[in-house]
Image (cartoon, rainbow, N blue to C red; front, top):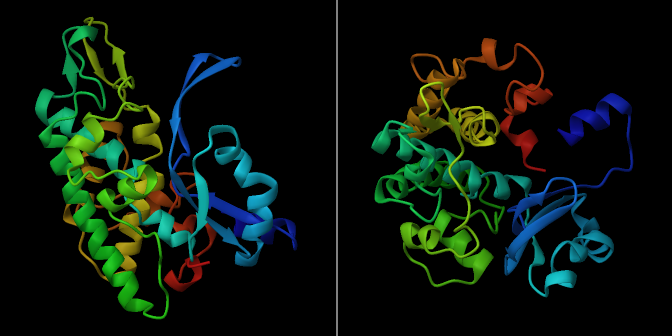
Length: 283
């Protein structure tokens, strides 16, 4: 995205960075005024281009995000933005949980009191969805490392390893790491009330509008470039696009470029920003 803007405006002195995970868990207390911070991560990761600007950026900005105010969350530099894209975090967790709630409950409840909390009530169905998505991501990560054996891709991690890094935890189980998290316990499942006074999954929530077209679909694009099959990524995208009336994937499971590229900001695949080759997204 940044490189597209650089080219458009002929910028020559831009420092771009991306943080791997949100450094803290926050929720609005009073809009525009106060926020509740449930705690910061122990370790954060960041990708920077040009790479040699990390130390300066860390000194003048990154340390103020978490480590100075909270005493935790120092940043470590990754070798590529791709490490962050292909680490399993919210772009996998959110759709996996929503799909699990749909499969178990049909995505609707008779009253608000019956709606499970998003993390506190995490169930085995949703955890299994994460495992399956993580398995597809692992196949892509392996193909990336095979394609570029001279690169370390440090911090390109699966779900459990990333959770251990961020939180310095000893969790070995996806279900326990999410269900027992004190930081995540108060987060509710996004729902809307229908005319029949039922509560249904809110498919206009960012868990759908962000994490599918700017999350799983990017992994799908990488998989196509690397000739890797990702059956569960396909299944979740198909499910979500059906609910929302979208057409990111064709019936045969390939990316529907006529739909994805019909307008700006339909999705986040590299071709939306004029990048057609896999090699051009590394840095």
